[in-house]
Image (cartoon, rainbow, N blue to C red; front, side, top):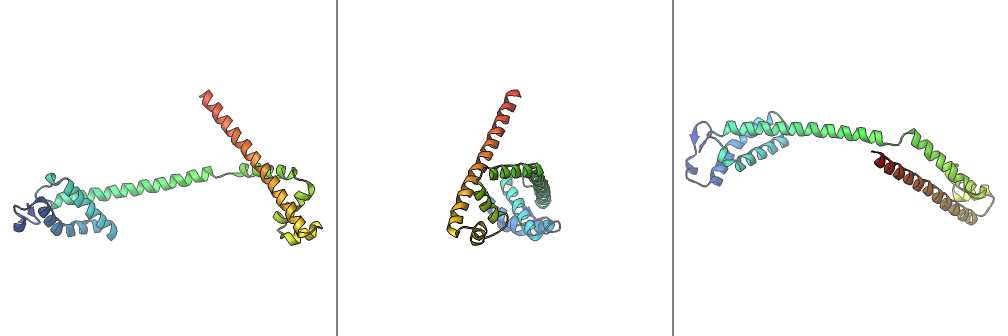
Length: 193
């Protein structure tokens, strides 16, 4: 095989394909790197060289004599593929960001959640509601809230614990009702389609 500017490498005449390939790589990889480096950063240029010579190894029977122009076309195509891939990744990231913005709960979700919390608070006794609101709304610790409620700290902690448990059950029932409603609407949509 002739390597470089019309030169034949005498040391590889009659040698195995691996030896000829190694000689070609040794002589031409710096030139392919220089070509790639003019168009991208050093790390990407190294990757382009590796990809170019991988193609050359896989298509060894197709490598022309002289190989440099063919290798530079492979490098150019590899760079173009990387640019297209980066553009696709950028578009995909934008699409994911757009979907995340659309999928984020909006003000109507907040209104429904607020209504559910107020309804759930309405299911609590007056003392339980007071305990929850003193801690959650007014930001008092248990000792301060017990003093406001006029009971011992232990009694207040028991009252708050029971109130939180009832509140959680009520809110969970709203969530399961909403999930069941969504499932019903999805099933009905499937029947009418």
